[in-house]
Length: 592
Image (cartoon, rainbow, N blue to C red; front, side, top):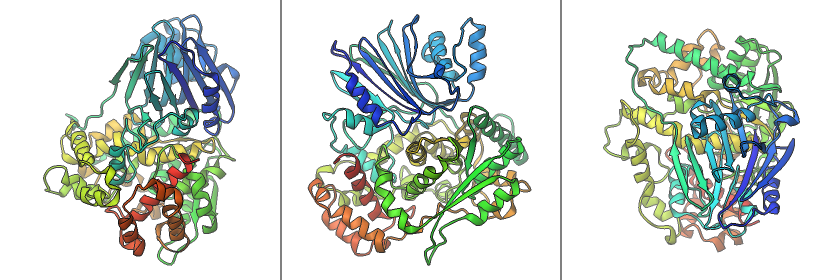
């Protein structure tokens, strides 16, 4: 896991080495172990390394094949690289390193962009081909690894986070993208690629690659598509349970084997992370380290799930670490966490991941995490509602999912951002474009390939990498996703959702974990909009910077302020917090 960046000139000038260095400073926490740069003709590449596989300098980046004129910077992990390495050796290739970076380099030399079809893992990378004068940038199938870019007539800049781009070029257009703003406030902070909240910065789409030519021309191509059609063979419930267990076990094991450092697990106490622990223990993992975080209680809600995570840790005899964070530590850390977000996020548990990652990074460099299970296996309460709904058109989705209808959005923001209902049209097009048997299949496929990318996948990447901690997400393994996409709703929705996971857990996990109702990461200090948290939001929204920016309709802000806990989204998020979170991100990343 690393941070990558680069500059490609279209105007017959050379890249600026100082600019590459400036970008690398904003990537240092993603890659604290070492750094490197490469310059040739119109290209400049930068890299910050978090050493996970082949810890020697032989695996350092940028990695260059001088004979072929190819240079690579790469962020991520390729889980099938040993098999690809053997295949390439059979074709006559020799390797100097023992890691996955050189495998990508040789695979590109042998197969070109078609190498993407063979890569199994999470990745974002850029490859410069000096012979063709082309830069290929690519992103993994479900966007686990981020890749942002800014393009003008003179140059292309790219990096693993937006901060590196903003820091490197003051001329980047930092005005708000109106369509992205509509997405942000409709889809609880999700802005699907290629847009970001800033007009001057875009992101590579998941499952796509782009080729930037030295004359400024660009080609973009999708290399993977998720379909949701039933298998020809009729499968019983037990067939599905066994198939999912086999696939998940393989996913978990490959994510612990492909590392030259210890791998831990973020253990929330829910069924998803508990399954990861159990399958690792079953596979014979020694001295398995697990980590849980909790917070102070509020009168309405308990602030931790330690009773469940403790039961799992005891059941599988892990080396368990749990951290209780006092409420007094939460608010002071919020601005710090937002400064590490590549884009604004509304999920209040982002700060929990940030605080947990800080302490976990002192113990291990790699963790497995349970993100994605709810989206892949239908674990959220809105899925059965959509499945059973007879509402026509996009309202079947938006009535259960959107944070605001279009009319309320127009009430929320300044009139200069008013326009059409772009989010409804975008989601209608997305759902219509998915090959699937049933409506719910379309929804889950859209979630896994588009919506989840920006929440929670981005949240986990940003908050862990802020501390040089690599997070691996077995539930987003491409083979498991493809299997689950063919599964009928009756294998997902019963029993409160994730039915097949619960059935495979019976007799394997503690009963208390299997039988518990669906819970969400408890953050009482930020869930209830009152006291210090409310005062914190007032300071953000009424400060000079916010007033000068003028993003929001003052009357709407005042309405929310009067009774903030009365204004919640369909998914029970605070509408006031949404406004404050965006403004806080802008203050931390644009105004500084």
